[in-house]
Amino acid sequence: KIDNFRMKKIKITICGGLGRMGKVLIKKINKNKKFLLNSVTDIKEGKKIKNIKIKKNSIDAFKNTDVIIDFTRPKSSLEIIKFANKLKKKLVIGTTGFSKKQNNIIKKYSKKIAIFKSGNMSMGINFLEYIVNIISKKIPNNYYIGIHDNHHKKKIDYPSGTALMLASAASASRGRNLESIKGKTFLNKKGNLQKNKINFFVTRKGNTIGKHSVIYSNKIENIELKHTALSRELFADGALEAALWISKKNKGLFNMHDMLSLK
Image 1 (cartoon, helix red, strand yellow):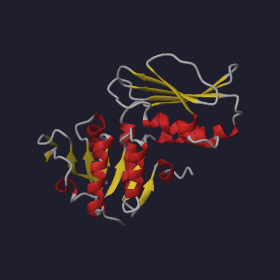
Image 2 (cartoon, helix red, strand yellow):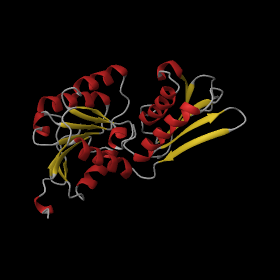
Image 3 (cartoon, one colour):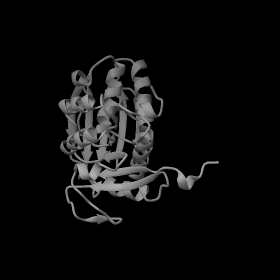
């Protein structure tokens, strides 16, 4: 019989500990027997969370941890990945808004360390992406495609990482690169679907946690696949499941589809 008290806890560092996701993750870790909050980093260093002093991204902040969970911004993520590489630490990236060049840098580092990266840590969204992949392969070309992306007013990047994930699934299923099929983006305003393009209808208002849908329309009918996040806890749960999963990997770039065996 396994003695639960003697099982080694996975030591976690939360980057962006004072952010919306950071706070939820810290709360979850402190209630979970599988994890131990090792350190917290944020721009506002010096404050304390659960008797842990917040530090800036540094060797000192990461040296004793097992897995780093990063919900920050692209510039900070690339800084974190360099420390992770130097110390050979596992990394879970929930940050969105990366450029193509930045994504290529992450891919390069994944040849040396284990990196789990997802534009959305929700299991439901990843199941939705899987369904979009299947439907987009079968649906006739006369159906126009639109992505609805609804978030709170403080979310900076648009379209969101989730919206881009869903659009990429739809375009890849049609044998196209997203860049070649990406149409207009309408921010906080109405717009029309374009033929042979994927349009983004983006809303950044209020306190919405996350609402996403994929619309297929041929002018005589609409098919809508929809996901609504009711709590940030679902993203935290997904990130912690990812931390547990990636802790057993040595190197490579992974996502929720790998973890959920959706490939």
